[in-house]
Length: 510
Image 1 (cartoon, rainbow, N blue to C red):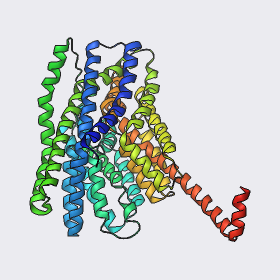
Image 2: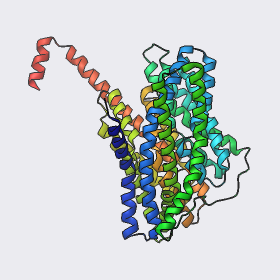
Image 3: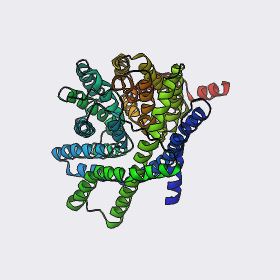
């Protein structure tokens, strides 16, 4: 049995692999190339420590609480075999789990032209509605590719008439909602519901839930833009925390803790209350299992508080100031290669990506190795980050990037195996992890502010590009695997044409 201490150490290591590469790059830049105040740098370092601890606690809590809650509810829903019950629970749970998503909280805090509460509620309803559609897809065996084509066409029709200030935020919303809170929960529910079916495609159809749930927020925010009168703000909501002494730094963090403790409590409360009601009415888990889940929720709560405090007080502040400093220099173009370098390390450090790489290696029967997939995703995310900063410096519309990008992805979806299509669109969700919203986006906002751009139209959209690129690369790898598979099948057929003695002689010749 794995010891809890070993699990905790492993989760801390995962958090360190996620945060320390970016911390190291920032330290080199600020110590030797880009001068920033020592108070801001010290605040960033303390924020990095809080994020490492917070992510570790959150991941531990998510594994033993959110994933388990999703699995138990998904399993219980399948036992009822009542479609209306499954759809109703999917809607409610999709909304509740998204409200607690930390990446969404960070995005909503940075979007200055939309009320924070209105954005979170809109995005959460979008996820809930599309989680409900995902369950219908599993029940009625609807091919994922057809749904993707239909809904992305709807996205681009709405986008053509959407206000520019809301456009990039809408596409970013699709990326941040598939974060560390939402993904384990949704996948667990999908596997449980797919278990109703006994056909050979049931397991493959359990993939793709994240893909569809990423579309919901985009459509929801686009629809909101037609009714919501946003503010005319073009700058960021990021609060730059400058501390002159270590004492003021300490009190600055202590002052922030109560705010985020209350915020996280309100976010997790609907999930906890819903689960407790479900436990009393239907689940009736044993005391030991319930105690484990409650402890997991406590871990999740503590992790989210530390994570959001570290992000908002120290991490995002330095990302914004670093971008502003580079953007205001005569070497502002250096923001593009720096962003690409960040993208390379961000994707390599994301634990969920390594899980995805193993899955693809297994499904392709080794035709696509983990190393090949890792390098491909690294190139994809580095390119996406570079393109995002190119947008910031040139002011090009997000539509110039997402329309051809999604067009290529959807054309590939008609060619490759449906399983690869589902996993490719799921990959877009796991690629846009916590560091994208907490550091990369504020960095782009800082560059945009320094160069005189419109933050809402130029800087936002970075998360969307990061979520889009894996859709192309994973499906390209899937096409390669299919080609290799056909060649291998052709070779086997040729070998089968010989008798057993000839086969032995053939291998001896080789």
